[in-house]
Length: 77
Image (cartoon, rainbow, N blue to C red; front, side, top):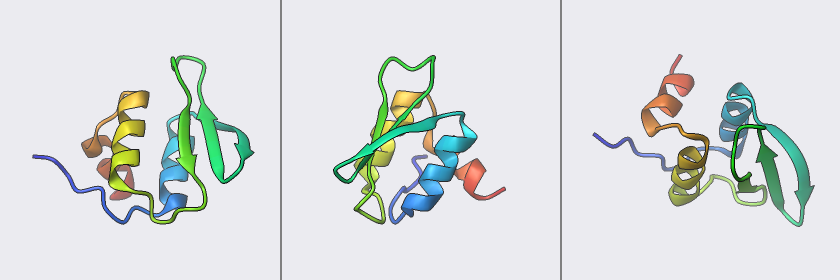
């Protein structure tokens, strides 16, 4: 079953990225770039859009190798 990722606040997703070991390496023009050594590409989030659109969350979760269920376990702990 696919979990809904609508209306996720920017702050919550940023906290999840920190929890997963990513660091914000730069902020430019309304975007935050997050990275970790083992990732092939950085995670980009728009810092001027809150809540984050669902497709951006799903793409970024895929980039870091996580699922919506993993994210919900973090949110509901």
